[in-house]
Length: 130
Ligand code: TYC
Image 1: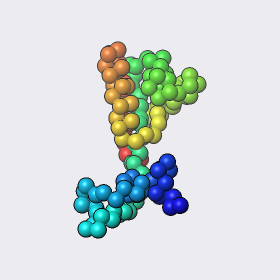
Image 2: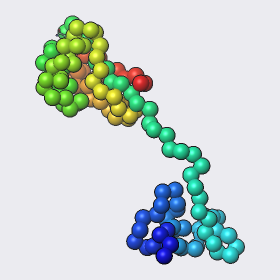
Image 3: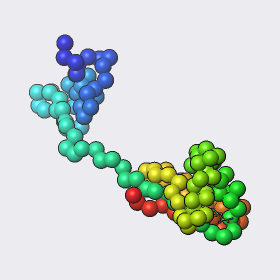
Image 4: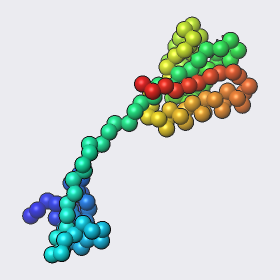
C-alpha cells in the first residue's frame, strides 16, 4: 500500500494533508480537470531563527541580592550561577544572562526592566543580535 495514502499515518513533511490522505477534491486550485490533486513541495528551506544575547549592565546602586534574584527568577539560573554572573557584571561592567530567539529575549528584558522599575533600582538589561 502507498504510505502517503494510509489514513492513520501522518503526511510526509511538505505534503499537504488532503493530498497525502488521498482526497482528490481540490478547493484551492491545486486540482486539475480530471480531479487529480497537486502535491506541492516547499520552495525554500526553513531558516533557523536569529538569536539574541541578553545582557545585564552594571551600576553603582542596584543591590547585589536583587540582581541575583532576577537572574534566578527571569533566567532560571541556579543560585551559584546567578552569583557568578552578578559578580562578573559587577567587575566587568556587562555580562551575558542567556541567548534566546527574539521574542523570548524581548520578554526577558521587559521582565527585568519592569522588576527594576517597580523596585526603583537603576538596573539596565539590553539585548543584542548574536
Ligand atoms: N554594582 C552593584 C553594587 O555594587 C551590583 C550590581 C551587579 C548591579 C550587577 C548591577 O547588573 C548589575 N551594588
